[in-house]
Image (cartoon, rainbow, N blue to C red; front, side, top):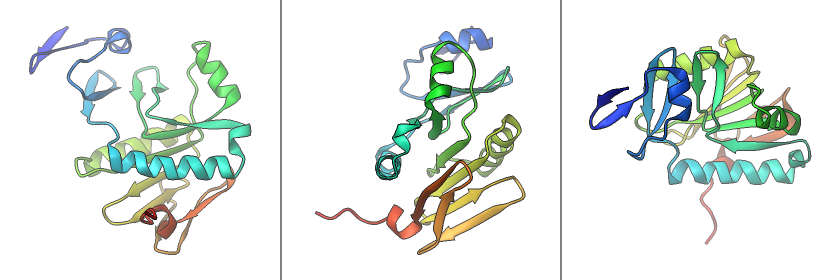
Length: 184
């Protein structure tokens, strides 16, 4: 293991998977590169809560779950942690048994520290791995980018409806609803 900023970094994927960093950050493995990020914060968890309530209201909890920051092995050398990912219960069971499963629907909630090239890198990797739909949510600009492929993106603003079709056909929400201020 190599040391960086007082933290001992793993040198192999196997060591990375067993690694428990103590610096309060989260990490991804991308072909030997260790990528540090802060993980979801209050603003991102609030949006996750809204989406989780919608997920339950639409009855999708009967067939699967929305997971926050799961470890997802996209390839044998890439472990990413999307902010939110949808897994069927069958996938979750296969994952529990040690099998690597790819979510069909991934949501990234962007923060001030996200870098454009890293976002594009993840979009490419997700689609190559078999993800079918990606939502990139930008809370600062109140915009949602709905990707159904790298070439097909719908930019949703204000009253536009974001949809998780074809993965979750009735999982839809307007941008205004997603960013609405809670009633006190």
